[in-house]
Amino acid sequence: MTYKNKFRRKAKMFGLAATLLSLPAGYCQSASASTPSAPELGSVYQPSEQYRLGMQLLNRQGKSRHDVEQGIRWLQLAAAFRNPDALFQLGMFHENGFDNIEKDVRKAIRFYEQAANLGNREAIYNLTALLLKKNNDHYDPATALYWLQRGAHWGDANIQFSLAMFYRDRQQDNRKSLKWLFESAWNGHKSAQYVLGTYFLQGRYLPRNLQKSFQWFEMAAKAGDAMSQYDVALMYETGEGTSANQNMAVYWYEQAASQGESGALFNLGRKYLLGESIPQNIDKGLHLMEQSARQGNPAAQTMLASHLRIGQYLTRDARKAYQLYLSAAENNYPEAQYQLSLMFAKGDGVPKSEIQSVRWISKAARLNHTKAQYGLGAYLANGVGIEKNLLEAAYWICLAAAQGQKHALDTRDSLLQMLTQKEREDINRRVDSTMMETGHPDRPGVDASGTVPHP
Image 1 (cartoon, helix red, strand yellow):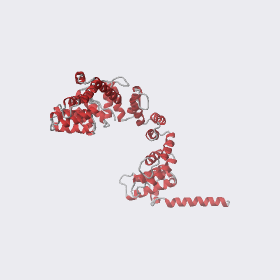
Image 2 (tube, one colour):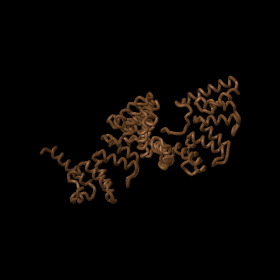
Image 3 (cartoon, helix red, strand yellow):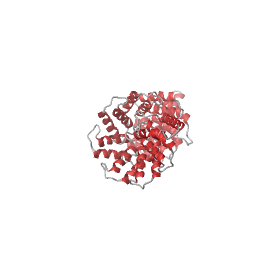
Image 4 (cartoon, rainbow, N blue to C red):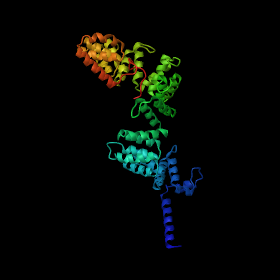
């Protein structure tokens, strides 16, 4: 045997001895025990087996302090042999803190980087999330982009979606964002499919196409995405992007509602209350409506408040109705703001106050609630709760009339006759400008109650 071969043999034996010395204490006894979980003697030199043993100890029910310590040591040993799963696990321990491992984001980043270099895609996901946290010493969007690009080219749908959002939100590069969004969606990412559905629905970043919007929503809905299930139901109900089918609408509302989607809970509850497309069931309708309202859905809060206010299906309770209206109104729901204005105007459940009535009706009018626009115009024309101002009154009444509000159409002409030609022209220009800014609704006169769109 040559000197060189002797040296290699000794070095190999030295490495073996070092590994044996690094094994968790008590391994020899556990390995010799006749238990199903005891590994073969040679298998502990496999990092994957070391990782498995470590996780087995850490996940054991009723684990002891000794189990935790030994589990961590097995993971550390596997990580020393560059096992990507062990490196990733230690990264999570350092990111969040675990047992006697203190929280240390810098160490977490180092472990994640090592795991990512070995192809662990979860490590890339966690690593980039840390690197993109602002107001931290480790904030590094350039490095995050590098890792997102690597992971995206590996075909990981989650990372492709994150890269698409990075390009959209941080670099305003819509072309690259759409490229990776489509890649992620075709790879089955539900959120990517949902986002594409909203893009096609709104005409945002992509030409408006209701059929394509429905197709993407349907893909995500079938994969279990609750928001997409809600949108599919809504499109079946309205016949937008697909043929109207009320049975399918109910089916998808039920799927989304079973996952607690607040819009679906509201719309399904409304259908049960009104007996639309399904047999009327007041108790079930109220139950669904209350679930939605507890989640803060302003439409559900408003509908429940209306039933409480008039005593339909529920015992009349004007004060409780006021609280529900107020909660929805503070979330800028115009129908609730309008109803609050009526309560203050009549002193129903609240002290009568023209000033408060004007305050809330003004808020609703600015959110394009046509009845509120007419009501505000009437207040201004008569000086109720606010200084009389015929020009402003004409503006709000003309704006409501332009959207088909019946009372505004009936009073507009008589009010305009009280103005000069120039004043009428100025009013028309203001109305046209407002209509351009807000977008003219497809169906004139539709108020802000009813079906709730997604935020």
